Length: 86
Image (tube, rainbow, N blue to C red; front, side, top):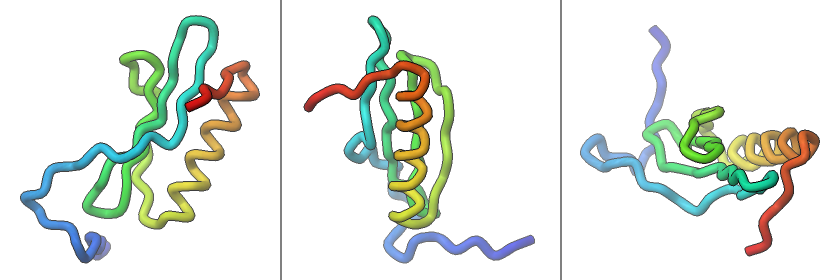
């Protein structure tokens, strides 16, 4: 079994924390949001369309977090989803 290291500042009794969303998109009357949560191994991205979980991924580094969010956002834009101005 591989040794998977936890983040140095993670404590087992800490709950996951919802962080700032990576992006929000709209298509007609449907909303999609890519939420970011703290995770013992780094961060967890969750892509939700309405109340449905479409994708999720745990990433270990900030560059991987950013690259994943950009990849997912761009794939959705190709399918007609549009950015929401905040």
